[in-house]
Length: 112
Length: 121
Image (tube, rainbow over all chains, first blue to last red; front, side):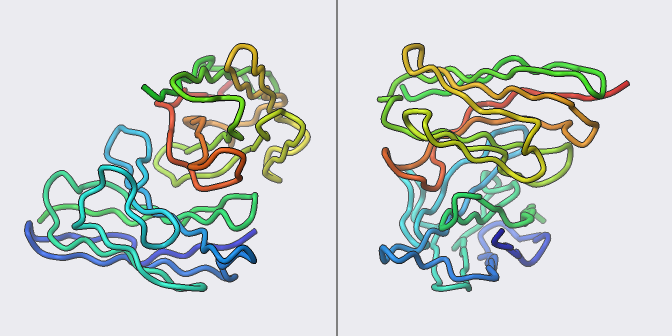
């Protein structure tokens, strides 16, 4: 299985300030079809995960442009330009280049 | 609207069985593979099983292989997870989730609200 490693484990952010989360995989997420199967999710307290970013950098429908995904191969980043109270929760990266989906351990974002 | 609704969770003793259901609506169910993902209390997300759009392809995590069986009934827009020989480590919220694209094994864009399974003596 592909191991997904997220850092940091937690972030405490002042409202309006940016935040950045790293996700590294131990195998390339670039498929032979040319797509890179890396996703970002936010799980707000008491809710199901919600898709933010698909294929590294494409924002899902309705997702704010303050969320930006970047990276390639095995090294990826999610940036939040201005963290607000509604962004609190746990952020997960996930790969689907293999059928056995695997998730990062999560990064908990809270407001200072 | 596109929706997934899980049911069937509950509290069971170790070694017992439970069957989870997931009702899909609002999309062309027969075109999509479906997944089960679980989340133990206070822990992260763990993929459990995948079933292809027509049910002919099934794949499961090593942690549940031989104990859990995924199935679907396309005439009813339902996905199921039959869980046998349950252990305390299977205690979790179980989500069903749909891939982003049809006829693809993809990232997941639609998730149910989850159903809670507690295995305890």
